[in-house]
Image 1: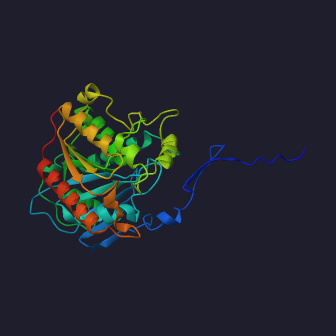
Image 2: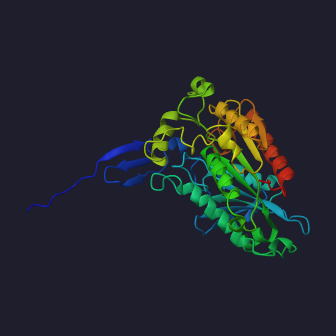
Image 3: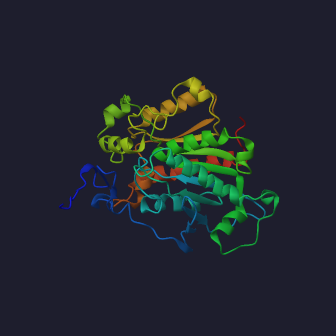
Length: 356
């Protein structure tokens, strides 16, 4: 009997990024040329550059750690930022220049112990809620550093171990979640889930705040800003995003799913155990109407919400510093303002855990 040769059939080719075959095989291609500069992998470095060192931590999930060079004042512990990257749950990596340019600058610009960036598991290999589970696992890693009695001890002697450096100066009762675009959606869910957990699970870690940068909130029915500006924002390709969301969401789910639109109504928002929120809204972001709607719903539900508005710029404008065309003068000013808004929020909220 002659051998039967079966050839797998391509059923989905998403923008040259992801190919899906009928046998379930997934192939990922190198980023297309137009994205190659933003997708350049930045190697870790332990010699400070612009006041920061960068380290890759072998954990589950893998983590990238930004450590400020500046030492804190004697005996002072500083907050930690836990970062969730963008990519419609399917693309990008925290080692890319897309993120490095902004988060290295942020780490050097505000008084924090460090920024821990999560390598999120990506759909379709790992559909949602895998990325949320990775967020909880990263918090578990922080908990493992915050041993009993650590917070009452003085700052330890300097060490060459990056994790030891973080542990020496970090206040694990002052953790802030921060996310870009759909990463901000993850911030919402992880913050609500963590704060509603039993105290024994939370351990020594407390969430002092959640920072949502241009969150990827949307619904099946386009908002006015989405309808009017759909073709104007280079960071928002709705057709591509819909195809990626189909890989990440439960089968048959739409943009009305809680992963994309997390607050169905005021009553649903009222039961959420949320830390104080800082929501960044860019006035040319096509999703700005939904972002503002989210803030209004959360405020009506009694949540503590601050808004940082960035006029004249679009979705994830602050990540374009590594683009082939660097940020123009206006965008550069908005980036500096956003960093200052984050600095102010972290400074005000550090040490103040939301009381549920």
